[in-house]
Every structure is written in structure tokens, then in C-alpha cells.
Length: 100
Image (cartoon, rainbow, N blue to C red; front, top):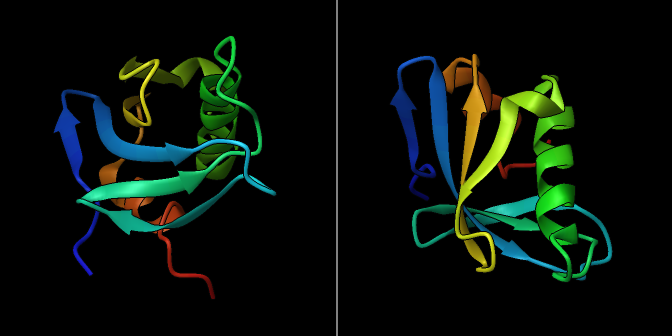
């Protein structure tokens, strides 16, 4: 399995994700097309799924929500998420789809 696309950009990390809304719970489920695949419990209306995605990534990486931003694909399942002031290896480790 190829690791997801994580791009370092200065002190930010850009993360390519694909999101499935209206899931039973919010979680990482794997890699799809080189993107981290996540299920989000919220519906895709009024930005709720984006909010849930930001909250989940911030909590999982243990960073402030203000450090996490959807910067591409707002109304799309394929999104780009920017995480500020975090090490790429921490993102890989914490958001790994392999459950232990």
C-alpha cells in the first residue's frame, strides 16, 4: 500500500484526502488513489463534513483546530487539508490507516 500524498510546504503539511460523509463514525479507513481515505459521520451539507474533518484531524494530531484548514475541494469528496506547524512524520504516524 502506497503512503498517502503528504507534501511539506514551509512549516505546513498538505494532505490529500478523500472523504465519505454520513458514515457510522469518523475514522481513517485506508488509502484510495494516493489519498488518505476518511469516513466522516456528518452529512455533506453546510460544510458540516468539512468541519468534522478539521475537528477529527486536529484531535488526532493533537493540534489546535486553527492549525487545520481545508484549502481545496470544499464541495468535493477529494480535498486538500493544510496542517500548520506539524512534522510530516507525525502526520504519517497519527493518521496511519493501519489499526493496531
